[in-house]
Each structure stands twice: as structure tokens, then as C-alpha cells.
Amino acid sequence: MLADVDRARQATKQLEGDLSKEQQRRVRGEEAAAELLDAERQALRDAQQSARQTERALRDQLAAQGIALAQAQSQGSALQQRLDDLQGQFDEEKRSHDGTRALLAGALAAVRKPRGVRKPSPGASEA
Image (cartoon, rainbow, N blue to C red; front, side):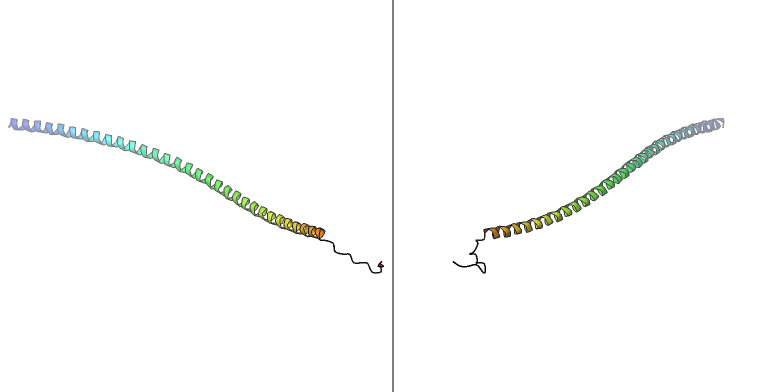
């Protein structure tokens, strides 16, 4: 009977040792998982911070490009208006030039026109 009690005590000690080892293994696993989780959380925070910085930079770039686009559109409109004004001025100058040429052509034609026989003035005596 003492042998049975002794075996039961040894079996209990063995079970207690196995249980202690299992608990230690579980604790080590939980600690490793916690460390891994902390590292992953830190990596996530770093990625979020990087994403926020990138977003700010892209928003700033988009705003700058929006301003540049508005300036380019404004400049394009101004250039188009200037082109229209110059085209109108050119057309006016061309009409004026054509009018001047017509007047000069008429004057030149009048100068080149052969003079006809002069009609005697009334009251002049014929010889």
C-alpha cells in the first residue's frame, strides 16, 4: 500500500512538473505573441503616420497644381483675348490699307488719263 501511495505521489509530482512546463511554455508563447503584436502595432502606427504625411504632401501638390492650372487658364484666356484684339486691329489696318491703295490707284489713273482735246472757252475767238 505504501508503494501505491508512493507511486501516486510520484505520478502527482510528474503531472505537476508536466503542468508547470506546459504553463511555462504557454506563458512564453503568450509573451512572444504579445511582443509580435506590439511590433505589428508599431509597424501599423508607422505606416499610418507615413500615409498621413504622404496624403498631406499629395494634397499640397494637388493644391499647387490647381493654382498652376488656374494661372495657366487665366494666361491662356488673356492670350486669346490679346490674339482676338490683334486680329481685329490687323483687319482694321488691312481695310484701311486697301482703302488707301484704292484711293492711290484712282489718283494714279486720273493722272495717267490722257488729256482730251480742250474745249475752247465760250467767248474765245476762233482764228
